[in-house]
Amino acid sequence: MSNAIVAEVGAGGEVVIDPAIRERLGVQPGYRAVQILSGEHVEIHFVPPRHSRSLLGAAKPFMRGLSIPEEQWDDAVAQAIAEEFQASNASTGE
Image (tube, rainbow, N blue to C red; front, side):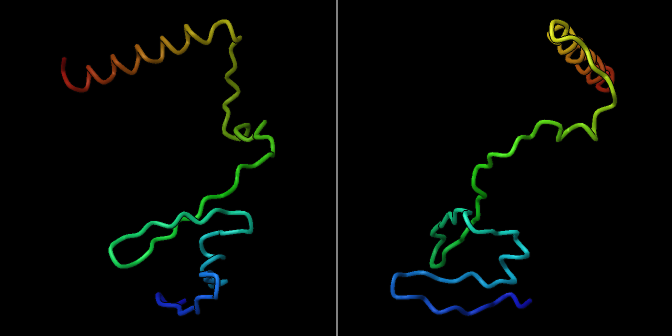
């Protein structure tokens, strides 16, 4: 794919994004095109729409089987922060 692709501007100001560019960037129908004027050209950033699919279970392949009851989360977070603080101080010699 070349870096420069020419497209004609339609009567309503629309420009068709080349299929190779859409495929490479993963742009699909429904995405929003955020246009930013940058000097004498336009940058376009594509933002996917909000999805309605559940993410329940998405992290399951990355979990190590560690699970604690909900009422113990605050203590576990505090302990993790303390351990991280101690490790960072140990590496700096403080």
